[in-house]
Length: 238
Image (cartoon, rainbow, N blue to C red; front, side, top):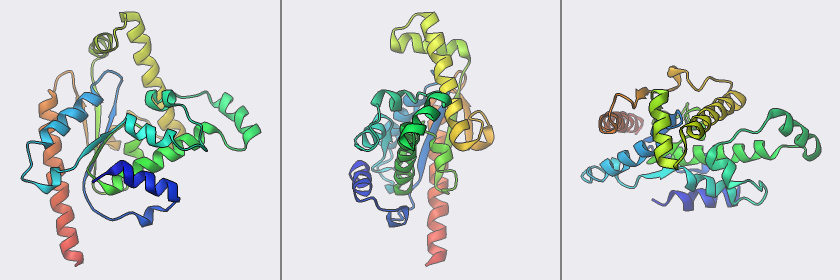
């Protein structure tokens, strides 16, 4: 299943959600505090899926983070910046408001609107792990979604960011706080929700105490449960 090809086709043809094939496969969204291990978890989960080749449910999965951004950034009407998308940066409401007075509609609004559309398309296709991009909120009404939130002690997150991005402790601390603030504002602005609300997610994990392997096994159990429930629903409908 080539998710990017399918999404690109839909965007180019300007088709609607109802045109998407109803495949009914599960998908996973990962919301995370900066440095809590969101991208790491996504690839640990993907690697574990490879060990379950006997089940069709775990075949053909993909992780979408930067790839998702590239799909959106290719749209010439948006003129979006990859840096903004990848970092999930939040522009000031005042600057965006001033820009909208002259353009009629802000680039930020169009950029994220298309990003959210791609997120929803991928989720309706299924078998994707979506990191960030408001994916838990964009897909909240889709029954096959498994929504995870990762948190960790601040000190541990700072150390992780220092190691991964080769930053000083001070710079890592500033970067972590900035990322968390940007993500909170993004969810508040577009969805009027608090990103830290545990009721938005199926599970909130403290990666400072719970190993990625444990989270992965629990996620696989949830995927199996959703797949079985979906199969029963399709059987009753037929």
